[in-house]
Length: 163
Image (cartoon, rainbow, N blue to C red):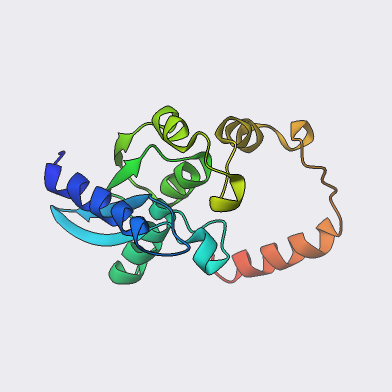
């Protein structure tokens, strides 16, 4: 159930970028049973980590705090509609509901004219298309190598965990 105080916190986290070098204005909060269990905001440039988006940082924080990789039952509040990377992380973690403030279109308009050197640019439409495309249809070239060896390790790991 939506609670405004959590969205206010996500937006307050995003506002930290106004005074913190190497950050961008994207903040997120993860809530379980009415309590904040994780927070994060974008540190991509500061950490030299293109995956350090607010939502991903909040997921990492919540997983550490709860000592689990399963955030089923949690809700995510974010200052901006998540990109495909963040949506994938949310799905993998099991987030049950998303609340967002600015849309991707609104953030794009706000960032219009900002030089690429001053931000970490993401072509959201291209990212969505690439992430959702089958391997052979993606723009990034890829080749499969040494699959037998890799599958042997996967099978050995799985064999040790079967009941």
